[in-house]
Each structure stands twice: as C-alpha cells, then as structure tokens.
Length: 138
Image (cartoon, rainbow, N blue to C red; front, top):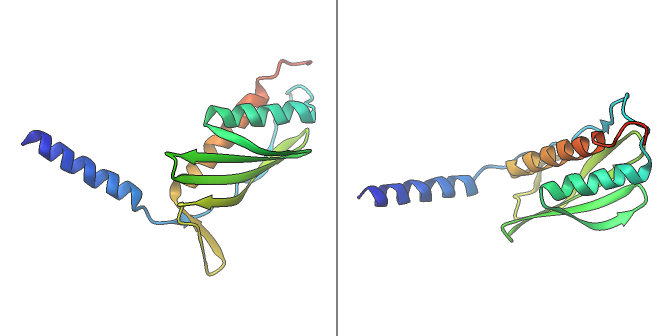
C-alpha cells in the first residue's frame, strides 16, 4: 500500500512538472566581465563560453567570430538554442529557438517553459565563473 501511494505521488509530481505553464522568456542583460580581472582576449572569452556551457551540457553548434551558437538537449525531447555574442569585455545570451518548450508569443510577449530561464541563468553564471578563472596577468 505504501509503495502504491509513493508511486501515485511521484506520478502526480512528474505530471505537474511537465504541465507547467509558460512564463515570460527573460532575455538576460549583457554580462560585463568584472574590472580587476586580467585583460581578456576574444579567444579567452570564447573558451570561457565553451567551458561554461559544457558544465551544463550545452554544445557548440556554430562558431563564428564574436558569436557562438549553443544547443541544450534535455532528456532527448526538449531542445533550446541560444546565441552567445561576446567580445573582450563581456557576453550576451539571446534566444534563437526551442523544441517542446511551450514557446509562443502572447500579445507580442515571448513565453516559454520556466526551465528555459533557469537553464540560461545557469549558463550565464557558468560562463562568468570560467571567465573569472583566468590567472591575472595572462
């Protein structure tokens, strides 16, 4: 009986998590890499984006000077694609597309599954951490 109750509770929780309503898609502000850090080259910032993304399983799908396109796939059914533009002073993440993330525009306001905002925030924090890890003077 106890196992059946636990199984039922898990089924309800999983269903509720999958049925979350869309929220406003948050376009993060440009992240300015903190002064006091070493002077970063575009290549250093590029590597920070790649390594920061890899921490959370984002993969590079396109690499152009000053812009990396990253893709995140969750459980083989949810997909998010973002562009990360960068230079020696910072970076900015912008939504490109998604699959199975409830993306829609309501009255001109982009809406998406709430996990998108969480995933992009984690990506931004990981990139910042990687950029700040370069030794001073290098």
